[in-house]
Length: 237
Image 1 (cartoon, one colour):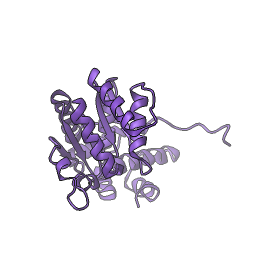
Image 2: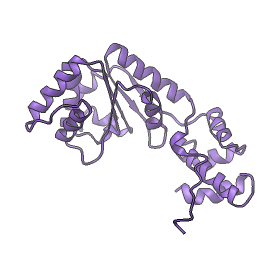
Image 3: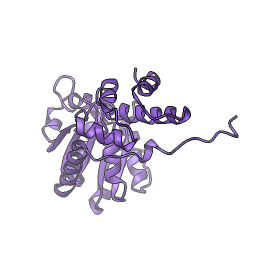
C-alpha cells in the first residue's frame, strides 16, 4: 500500500499564500523595524497566519535570522542557536556566548525574527532586549496573545521591556472579501459555509478547503456545502 501510494500535492499548504490586510501590516511593521532598528512585536491567535506572513517576508532575504522558539527553550539554547546562525564558535559560559553574539551582530547587517516567542522565559526576553540595545539589531517578536502579557511579566516586572516595543500589530480574523479570495484559490464558491465552519480562521479555512477539495476529487464531485461539512468533521474541533 505504502509503495503504491502517491500523495496529492496539488494544493500543497506549504506553498499557499494570499495577501491580506494582516500580511500587509506585518510587512510594514517588519520593514519599519529594520529601517529604524527597532524592537517590535506581532501578536495573534493560533491560525491567524502570523508564521505564514513572516516566512513569506523573509523568503528571499538571506539577511534574516529566523528562530522558532518552543516550550523547552532556555536562554542558553537561544544563544547557541544564534551562534549557529552567525557561524560562531559556541563558548561554554553564558556571558561569553552573549558577548560573541553582540560583537558579531554589531559588525553585520542582519535582523532577527523570533517566532512563537510566547515560549520565551522572562530571563530570555530580557536578554533579547539586551541584544537589541547593545548590538542595535532590529528584532521582531512574533507570538500568540499570551506574548502580550509575557512582555510585561506576571507582576509587571518586565514593564521596562514592554515600554521598549516600538511597533505592535495584532492579527485579526479574515474579512469576508479575504475569505472569498482564499476560497477562490481552491476553486470553491461556498465561502459563507467556510466562514460558518471555521469562524474565518485563516489556517482552519485553508485546511478545510484542502481536505474538501481532495474529498470532492475522490468522489468525482465539485466542492459543495455537503462536502465542506463532511471535510469539517476531520478538521474543525
